[in-house]
Amino acid sequence: MKLLRLYIHKSGVFKNTLIDFTHHGEPQDLICLAGVNGSGKTTVMELVFNLINFINPDLSLQNIFFDRLRPNVLTRTEFAQLDVLIEDKVLSLVLGDEQNIQTHSKYTGKQGFIIENEIKSMIKHFENNVVKTPEDNNDEPIYIRKLAGVREAERFSNRKIDWKEEHIIKPVIQKVEKIDTEEKVTQDVFQNRPSVYFFNAHDREIQDIRYSSIPQEKRKYEIAHKYSPDKDDLTKTLVFYDYAHSEKFNDLKAWVNKHAMVDKSIKGIDRIHFRVVIETKDGGEHGLEQLSSGEESLLILATQLFLRASPKAIFLIDEVDQSLHPEFQEKVMRLIKQLQKDKGCQILVSSHSEIIWEAFKDKGFISLTELVIR
Image 1: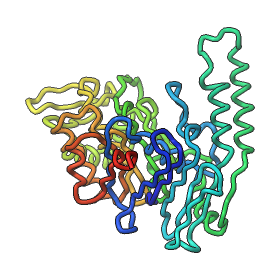
Image 2: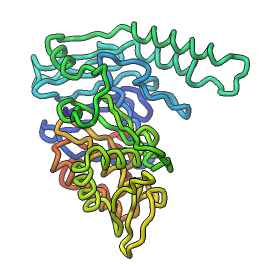
Image 3: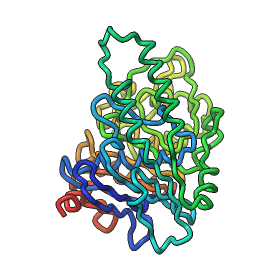
C-alpha cells in the first residue's frame, strides 16, 4: 500500500488543497511534510491515519482515536479524499459528499471509492455525549454513560457507507478483512497485509513498568494502529522477544545498536528482574528508565519500525525531530533511510527542522507553508 494524493477542503488551515505524495506520478518511499508551527502538519497526519481506517470493514468506535484535548480531525473537516495504491488498484477513501470526489484518467477502470458521509456527525455526537462529558459529573452515574456508549456504538455500526466501483473495492477489502482471533507476532501478520502505523509527536516515551513475570505480547492485525506507550510498552516488547524469539531479538538488538544508539547499546535482558539492560561506553549499566527523552524516541522508533516494517506498510511520524539534538536528528534520518531500503515500506515524516529538510533536498519534500499560503 502506498499513499498517492490527499485532497482537503475546509479543514483547519486548508481551504482547498491537494497534497501530492508522488514524484512524476509514482509513489515516493520517503516523504517529508515541512512547515512552521500551525501549517497543518499534524492535521495531514491525522487525516491520513483516520481515512485509511475506512478500509476496515469492521470499523467501530473502538477503532477511532478520541482525545479529550481536541475534537477528532474528521469532525473538523468538510471534505477529504485519500488515494492509496494497493497493488495495481487505487482505493479512494472519501469523507463527505460524493459530489466532490476526484477521479484520475490514469486509473480509469482501476479506481474504487469508499464514501463515508455519516461518520463525521456520529463521531461528533459520541464525543459530545460520552467522550468529552465532565469526569467529575456526579449527577450522571457511570453506568448511564456506558449505556450511552453502547447505544452510540450500535448507531455507528448501522451508518450508511457507499461503495462506487464495487468490483474494484471488494477484492481489496477481502484481503484486509479484520482477523477475529488474536494472532501472535510469530505468524508475521504484518508482512502480508497493508497497514499504517502512526507515531504522534508527544507519545514517544518509555513508561517505567515493572513486570513480575514474563510479559505476553499478542497483537491483532489492524489496518491502522497508533503507537501507545502503554499498549506498546518497550520493556514488554524486548523482554518478550528475548524469551519467545531469541533469534529475532538478537537481530533486533544488533540493528538497533547499530542504527539507533549513541555511545550506548542494549546489552541484553535481565531475566531475573524482567528488565532491559543498557550498557554505556565506559562499561556502566542502567535500565530504560534512565534514557533521555531523545534516546527514548530513537529507541522506540527503531524497535517498532524494525518489527513492523514490510513492503505493504506505511509509517507516519509526526514531528520526527521531537526532543532530538541535531546529532540525533541526523541519526534518525539515517535510521529511517536504511529501514526503508531494507524493508521497502513507505515513510511519511513531518518536521520544522532544517536538518531534517536537508535529507529530502532531492525529492520527497513537501512545503505545507507554501501550500497553505497559496
